Length: 156
Image 1 (tube, rainbow, N blue to C red):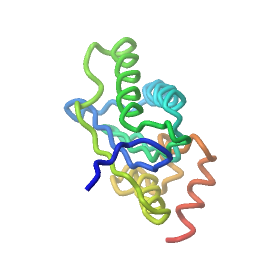
Image 2 (image 1 turned 45 degrees about the horizontal axis):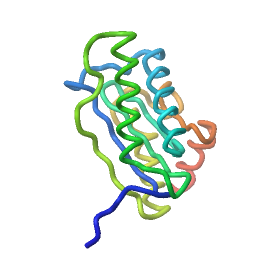
Image 3 (image 1 turned 60 degrees about the vertical axis):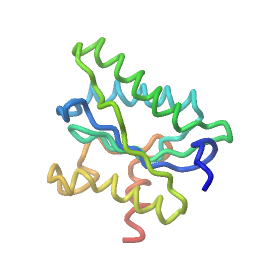
Image 4 (image 1 turned 180 degrees about the vertical axis):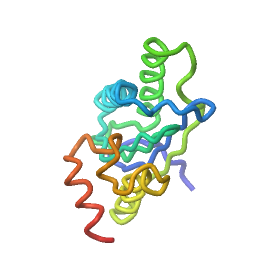
């Protein structure tokens, strides 16, 4: 079987965990700083962030390559490098991320919808809020939160 090269217009589910699973994403300014760096990496590697959720000790992303040159491996490297650098510079001299992350290639629209639903509902499952719309650190960089919530609710 041919090895997957992580290039192109594929969709991915990605999860980054914080170093030692410390609760880093409990304040808006830390989430904003990290999301800005994710967007920087996404622009450089030509990805769209379709959905995200910053849980206290990890982050879920649903991304899609916007061109044949989109490189998921480089996006992951840059997103973690940029956000980790600025986090340690602004807040603490400690690592932000664990070394490895989870990633999965999504091969169908149905799989993408399942992942989007999972991401949006994560704070509810964790008992942090009763409704996804009540959680401040969930959203999309492509559509408004309301549109994202409607899209994942339509097929429940």
